[in-house]
Image: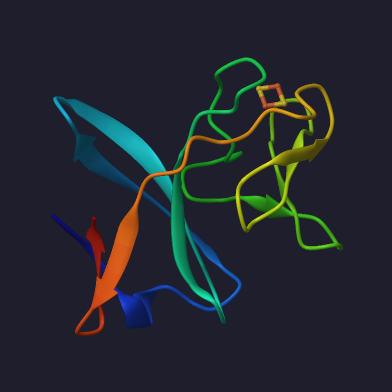
Amino acid sequence: MRLIALNDLAEGGFVEMEAMIGDDAESLILYRDSAGVRAWLNICPHAGRRLDWAPGQFLKSKDGHLVCAAHGASFELVRGDCVAGPCRGDALKAVPVQVRDGEVWLA
Ligand code: FES
């Protein structure tokens, strides 16, 4: 399944979108940096809330971590590991994606 054109995903930025994962429509967090594109379920391992404070609006800390809008858990953006906050040691659930011909696809 095609998710988004690579050009619509700014480097250092997040995009939220819905995709079918198995039989379920899930909200995904897409993130792009110089190493490529990664995606995770938009479900915080702390209390299962979405991480965005409004649809598609994510908080990023000064040290480049994704911060859950609900209770402030911080996630590094290589593996999605929680590095601070109430679910430290836990991790976002990664969703495999790949970039082909300038488009991002579910892998
Ligand atoms: S639900 Fe994300 S920090 Fe609590």
